[in-house]
Each structure stands twice: as structure tokens, then as C-alpha cells.
Length: 480
Image 1 (cartoon, helix red, strand yellow):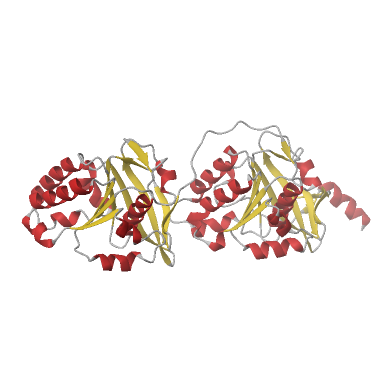
Image 2 (cartoon, rainbow, N blue to C red):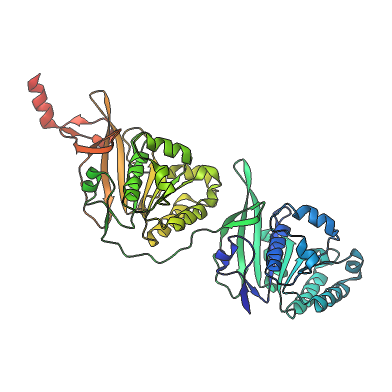
């Protein structure tokens, strides 16, 4: 028994290597979920590796019709049919009407002649359409007894919902079950793949996003877990002198820092300055934005005198905009960008936008926990920005439930003093480090971000409408 590639982009990461051979795997799902595309892609990629493959269909479709449907995919190479790597074996309606014994005998005869490495039966439940439950169960037992002797990887397709799979005889006869669903989400439908069962293989269960493109099936695995690294003692400069002082010498390397505040308080600017500081010191970085595309990010940075394109050209910076793809794909694009340049810093800008883009089954804190742990395990220092709805005041840090995941929390606020809107910054939390407890003024201009002295003579700064302290009010009264 050996593990062989599935031929499906991204799936082998979930299966930690691919399918076992020999084994029998059921590819299940409702009509239109992409089962035939899945098995065809797997079959043709195996044939491209010089394996002998056999495609058995019970739908009596002519090979020309299959060519017409599949020719739009890059994996489909008709020359592999002519070369003999893939054998097309239709099972006629006449044989199906003769019953179980005739079906099994016909398939066995073809297998004995071809001796395939990979076999696809598409779909398997057509063989039992005219049978009652007892006859269907007997056919599957007999059929699977034969399959075990083929010494091949057998991929079966079948139209099943996940609830129907639980009751089906097939579900406990097969070695593996891959369930594909096509579910409505917002203004579109989204595909998911779920490995329900896979004997002899450690796999990552639960739903994974997937889609069908011109290259066939692409699966976007969720980020893997991992053991947590011990807290580092190394310090990473934020690029802002005042913020380094407030955080006790900069961020702890590999930590996760949340920067939360209302619109316009300077979150993205602080984040970009943190990234520019890194790449200027040959510390590769990735910007992940859920609010702006790459062009807008570059243009905004140029206004501050930062040429991000220059760092991108030097392979020191990658920009990933989640506006370009479904949010379920984000972790895969993030992982690829980090690996491409061995990134040490990440700016994750606009996590509040995630809530409206995630499916209902995926709570935001759970989704973010995977991302936070993944980046911490890679010892990547990450700054997350979150937009709060309140303009001033309020005690809610994020409203998303993610602040407990963070090693540090920095709060930005508007403050109204003498009919003027000013900005305040405070460090609420810095795990493993002492930090400034003062509420300081923050100023943003063409030179970047500057942090000034604490607001003196006022109390209630975080309320947004501070009042003079009693001693200051007393002095002020006598001045008047």
C-alpha cells in the first residue's frame, strides 16, 4: 500500500500526501457539485504520470460528448486517450438490466485485460437504480469484494447529500469519503470539500473552500495547527520612535498586535510605517488588505514618501488584496506570499471586514485564531488593524471577540478638546512586556506618524469628551 497524489490542486495538503493505493474512495455530492470534473482531473493527472487508468461510466455517454464537456479544462489531454493511458469503458443499459452479476462480470473482464492503476466508476449508484434496498445492499457487498482484489485506487462518484451518506451502505464499505457541496452564500454559490473518512491517513477534517477554474478543481485548505512557540525576547522596531517607547522597546518578535480605532485615526498609516521599517532593514514583509487593492495601497504610500513598488521589485514585499478573490481563499494566498519571500512581518489590514464575508458556519474568532496561531508559529510579527464603529468614546475594543487572541492591544481614539478633534493612542495590553500606561497624542503628517506627550490637565480622554482635572479647573477659574 502506498500513497499517491490525488491530482487535485490543494487536496494533498489536506490528505498529507494523497490517496492510498489500493483503496476505494467515494466522491459524493448532489448534482452539479463537480464530481465528474474531480475524478476526471485525478484520472488525467495520473495518466500524465504514465499510470494506466480506466474510466467506467454507466451513463452510456459517447466519448465525443465527454470530450466536449471536459476539453475546456487544461488537464484534459485527448492524446492520452489515443496513447492508451486512459481506457474508456461504457457499461450499456442492456447489461445493467441483466442485473448485478452481469455488471460485475463485465467490469471484471475489462479490468483483467487492462490491469489499471487507477479506476473511476462514474456514477456507481446508477447500477442499483432498479433494485430494492436488500438487493442494493447485496450488490454493493459483492461488488466491493471484487474491488478489494483489483489492487488499484478506485474512485467512485455518487449523488448523495451528507445526510444520505450516513444511511448508505456505501459509507461504511468504502475506505474514504470526499463530500463536495455547493452552498448559497451572499450573492453567489460557494463550493466546499469535506473529507469525512479516509482509512489509514491522517487528514484535516471539516469544510475547506474550493472552486472549479479552467485548470479544474482547486482546494483551499484551512491553515494547519501547530504547537505554540515560546515567547521571544527579541524586539522589533515599529518604525515610530514614540510607539517603540510606549511598547517597552518595540513589538516582541513573533507576537500578534491589534490596533483598533475608528475610521481615520491612523491605523493603516501606522501599519504601513511598521512594514516600511521592516523592508528598509531587509526584513521581508507582506501586506494583506481587506479594504483596498494593491494600486490604492501603493498610491496612498507614495503620498507619505514610501515607494512600495521598489520593495516589491526587490522581492522584499508582497501585497495581497482580498478584494481579488473569495475570502475563503485568503489563507492560501497569504501562505504563498509569506513563503515566496520568507516574510518576517505582516500587516493584516481591516479585519472588521471579515465578518460580513465569512459564511455562517465559520465564526470570525475561530477563523482568526487559525491565522494568528499560524503566523505566531512561524515567528512572524503581525499587526492587525480593526475599525470600530464609534467615533469617540465607548469601551468596546473591537466588537468582534478577537482581542483575547492578541499579545498586544493598542487603542486609537478621537478626542474633542476646545472644539478641536485630536487623536489619542494608548497601549492597553502588551503580553510579556511592560508598557506605557499614559494616553498620548498622535499626529499624522507628511513625515509619517509622531507620538507626542500625554494629554495633561484632562481626565476622561477615552470618552472622547475630556474634562479638566479638578486642580486645572480651579486654576482656570482664578485666571478668569
